[in-house]
View: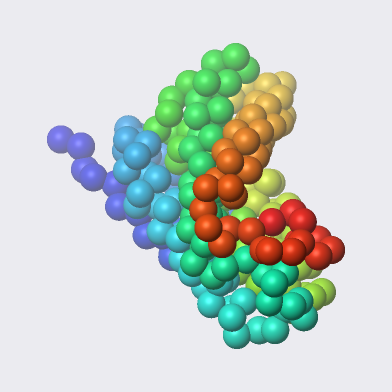
Length: 208
């Protein structure tokens, strides 16, 4: 009889920041992994949803220094962020799944989703950190994103069981494909969701 695996998003997010390799080892020992959609709904989605809610709340409290017309709508950009980030998770997970066998790894959508979800936990914390004033918010956010890429490499390496010599290749290919998928669908969502983009893009807000 298989015992259901329980995910504790808050605890796993904290552990990913203070003891990341232990989180990877624990996930590596899960056999069999839950279905990919359960991992997404019980681990990835709650954390990314909370990160969007908290960051949007902070943007309303902390002045950005930009005029109102240069800021996207709260609800429009919030919905867009949740959808775009969800697409990013799914894109990375399925890219890792399909590319794993090419790099002599273990093609498994469930374990790929587990690896990607764990690897992206610090990146969702980075979204909250970036809402704080410049330069501390952006600087800490950038460091957390780089840290998340490092953790994603170790997650893919350990959870998908990659051999030496193929690990960096799968990591680079997965990030490239996942980013490409997110970019394509993300740009499409901007035009479909009212308020997802500001009326006037000033400076770096053209990236939104």
